[in-house]
Image 1 (cartoon, rainbow, N blue to C red):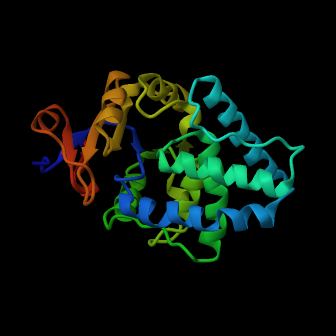
Image 2 (image 1 turned 120 degrees about the horizontal axis):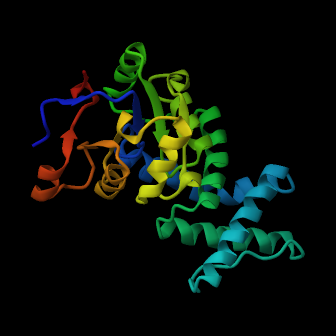
Length: 256
């Protein structure tokens, strides 16, 4: 069972998003389907805009890397010399393939983030947060703690989520955001890089996540780690419960 409290002397609280601050169902049942439903409309309406061209270039480069790496199932994205409608269809095929494979590529996350801007601003989507999240973040800030985010979603998408949350705009509480540009979330080096960029020793950071492999990588880098046990998250084994501290609620985190 999750511990009653987790005590830490950390200066910095590094938060995952999906399954930690935000329900997995919100991401999978609202954010991702929005992209799939509106992708063609988005491409048609923003064609030739610099941001859109950059998104497509990034997706094309990723598709080329995939095929070079032997991932022959990766749908190619047609060159800029092709007919617009055909390029758009190739982008749709690639994005649908990536999302059905639950890929976390930077190129995909970049496009998704840009699409979610419209959704949030039009109030078609309001970002879910667990009930304890906003109040605890405010308390931690008052205690002088720095709050940072590390998610596979792009930095732009992270900022949108906390700006348009069900608890209002919380972006002023967040000191820094990190995404997969620092490395994959299951790679130890990513957490060492984050500590270096924040200018602190890894053991001065506590990382809260719902994914054991991420906690393991952060722990190997020297960070304090705690696994969140939230509604909808995957189950933990007896061994994992013995190996890692766990919480069901941010209120359980206490500071020395």
